[in-house]
Image 1: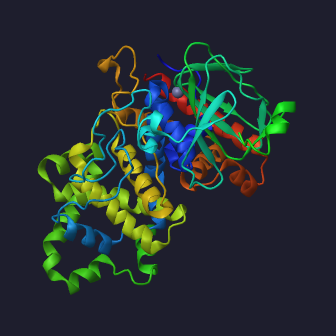
Image 2: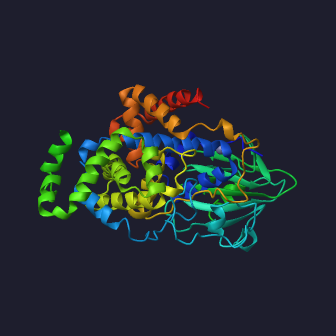
Image 3: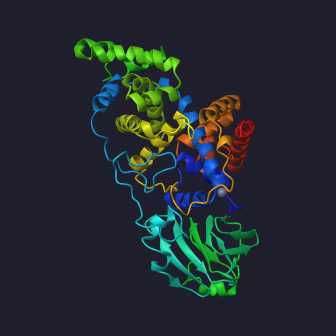
Amino acid sequence: MIPTHHPSDDYLIAYAAGSLEEPLSLVVATHLALCPRCRKEVERLEALGGVLLEDEAAAETATDERALDSVLSRLDAPAPIAPGPIAPGPIATGPIATAPKPRQAAPGDLRVPAPLRDYLGGGLEQLDWKAHKGFDEAELLSDAPGFRTRLMRIKSGTAMPAHTHRGNELTLVLTGGFSDEHGHFLRGDLAEADASVKHQPIADPGEDCICLAVTDAPLRLTGPVGRLLNPFLRI
Amino acid sequence: MLNALATEARPGVVPAKAALVIRPRQEIQRLMRAEASERAAEQTPEELIAAVAEQRDREAFIGLFRLFAPRIKAYLMRQGADPASAEDLVQDVMLTVWHRAGQFDRRKAAVSTWIFTIARNRRIDTLRRIRRPEFDPEDPALVREPETAPDAHVEASERSKRLHEAVATLPKEQESLLRLVYFEDKSHSVIAEELGLPLGTVKSRLRLAMAKLRAALETLE
Ligand SMILES: [Zn+2]
């Protein structure tokens, strides 16, 4: 099934340009694994990057002959094993030649595509889930300052506490689905909410809804229960 | 002309001719370079990289180096790299091009696209020291297009050519905004602040530019 809710252009451009922070890149790249449409879009945006690079004024930095000497003298040396991105890219820009590919022994849990799988260190069940009323959450990437990155598991048919955000929130559905004021979100769909949005997602009946959620500032709970919970429960 | 001036004006950079006198055994390389320049002018980057991949053709590689190295360096310096680390990274990127030329797939990307992504990823690894998660094309969990029509695939260099022409027709302010977004690693709000424009104006300019580029590609795909 092809997703119907996609990241906005801004995120895709920043991803292609390489200026997106790691937690946001993780959400975008995981969406890409589930969305052929956006993969194609990123291909085009990378092509645009190449075109802009070609047009970049070379006059500012004339070709340095010594640099060319240095490179030519090293062509016959074996390819260095460079640290590459955690997963090899679509057009092979990762580790050079002989570098051992960071390959999973088994495909593992197919509910979780790469690159997110590489961040879990095991299956969904092995995560350190913290139970809350109606949902569980597990923290990822806790070393990325300014962001909260979590997997949320909302019990099927359950409503999350209503909340607003101080910053932006990106939520990517992995299993099940949820609805809020903005629509219905299923596997691969990406929901974007900014500070102006107050929302209360309700998980579809049937299967628990597992989402990857990244916020760039702590959320604020609204509503009476939310206010009560707020000091303890930083959603 | 500008190139020559820039080289001579930079301290510590030995102009090509002087280097020859000091290092005569590089005579062969010099001849190779002269021919490489001619070839670079005649052959497309796709042809040059094919020669590198299939014949380990150094002359073709020099052609690619001349074409891309100064641009990669400009790109990296715009991203805030100092000249020395930009230089190291350029060499690193070009060595990667040499070693991985065999993995270049012209159906998937133009040479400029491929080199851009190598430079971008090296920059992120080295200068920003963060990870850039990427999907894995071999992942069994990857969701693929429902119907695959390989014939419908546009030649990637043709797509880049169209983009190139479309970028050239953009109003100046839209083109320079695109460069800021791609090359200066700044958020839209920082760009808006620096240009003294409301954030909304920056966003709508960018949206206009993207719409035009998309329209240029539509006739192709
Ligand atoms: Zn998408």
